[in-house]
Structures are given as C-alpha cells and as structure tokens.
Length: 319
Image 1 (cartoon, one colour):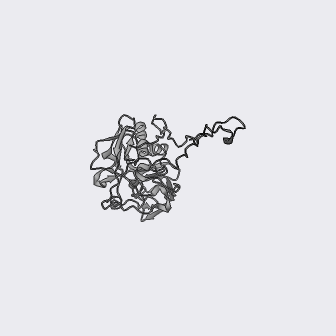
Image 2 (cartoon, rainbow, N blue to C red; image 1 turned 120 degrees about the vertical axis):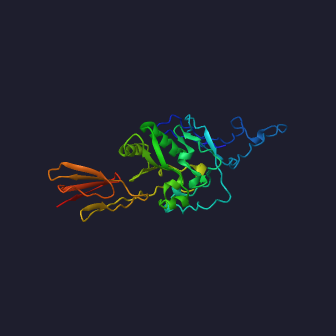
Image 3 (tube, one colour; image 1 turned 45 degrees about the vertical axis):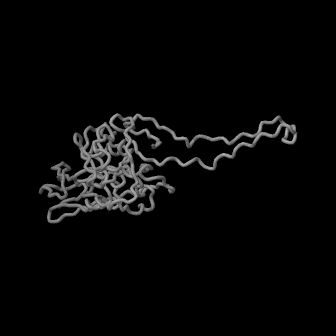
C-alpha cells in the first residue's frame, strides 16, 4: 500500500502529513561508567558489557507502491486505485526522451489500467475518471492527483466545467495534432470549456490555481501544471533535479490580404489561438467586435486591434 504526503492546495482542507525522513535516529549510547573508570578496572568475575550492535547500513527497502489515491467524492483522499507496470506495453507508449533532460518529462513507469478501473469512479466530487482518461485514448493512463485537486478547486469557484481532453497516450496525442511534449501525455493537463462563465474568467481562475501554462484556443482553453513535481507513483523517483522547461514563445504578425485581416500564430501548439478583433474610428470610438480567424473591418474603421490567445495584442492603422 502506498504511503504518501498530501499538499495543502487551494480549495482543499486536508493537512500535510509528514513522512519519517526528518526523524533523527540516534546511534547506540556508550557504556555507562563512573568517571575515571576503565574496562581494565572492572573485577575479573564481572565481564564487560557486550558492545552495542552496529546500526544497519540502510533501512530495508519499502514495498513497491501499487496504488494511487485521489481527492474522491468525499474529499477524503480515500479513493485509491491500483497502478500497474506491464512487462510489455502495447503500441502507443513510446515516450520521447525527456525534454532538455528535464525530470518533469521522464516517461511513466506505472499506469492506471483503464479497462480494469471503473470509469464512473469519482476522482473528485465533480469529476469521474472517464472524463479525464478513457481507453479510447490508450488502455493505460496517467492522472496525477495534484492536477485533479487543482481542477476541482476551479470547479468549486466557477461552477460547471466541461473537460474536452485529459490524458492521451503518445500515439493518440500525435493523431490529434498534439505537441511532441504535450502535457496531456503526462497526466497533468486538461482542455476545458466553461459552462457558466466566460473564457476570460476561466483563464483567470486557471492562473489563480497555479497553472504552469495556459493556452487559449479558438475551441477550448488548455491548462496544465507542468511546473508541479510529477507524482512518483507514476514516474518513480528521479536522481536529477526537476528543472523547468521554457514556456512556448508566443508571437504573431498582423497582415492584410485585399482588405481581409489575419495573423500568424507561433507558440500555440495544440490548435489555432482565439482571435478577438475590434475596429475603431478616427476619433477612437469602438465600431464593432468580432471573434474569428480573419476579419474584414468596416469602411469607416481607422484602426484594428486583435488580441491573440489572450496574451498578445497587435494593432494596424488603416488608410
């Protein structure tokens, strides 16, 4: 059975439970003697005490961790699911070498068998396993508990959230155009649609919950927790430091083709970013707004602005 530590996260009230790594184990004590007395002074019929046993070189190895525990429906972290390390993995799990050597991108060593664990299992009060990982995207899946904690915390604040995509195995991810190092393959990323709030509000709350990367796309919002240390149940211990990879560099160029405006989009690796257009007249008054990949401004527009993926804004003056 797994022994693990629980971090106090936003929206969660479970305390941190320390392990025993901070306990100071004292060595055996010296023989108890009166000051100035030596072993040679002891009476012949009173042999010296046996010396203390040598302390063991190392603690015995712990049992392999064979389950992972989640927040669960009752927020008690008692929803514990078995993990497996198949001797022979099926096709679809050929993970790339770690990105820039980062321990955050090492391949999993254990998985949930999604054909064994019931899809109806609640990983959090509002999220079933089937919403996060499905056998259609790979029989074996990785769902990191800290990411579920963050997702549920967002749900507690915003209300209903639709998860379009969670875990994907390597081949499935490539088949839908995912990035080579998409965090969907590592079990800490979600593509989300807000149900009762705006994309802007969802974007803000994703950042509030500590997302390492947010991507706002035309059809969804991507939130992942790539900066949080990966769960050792799925990834095993790492001998090297888990340094962070650089975030994607976003860039865009606004262009005009016969009166129709568009932009390039670099750094959005899982689809086209959301483009929000606005047209302004010569006196600085807003004429209209538009959402779409391209835009044809009205004839009296003097300036057009476009916000791309909620992170970049480009402006063009019109003749």
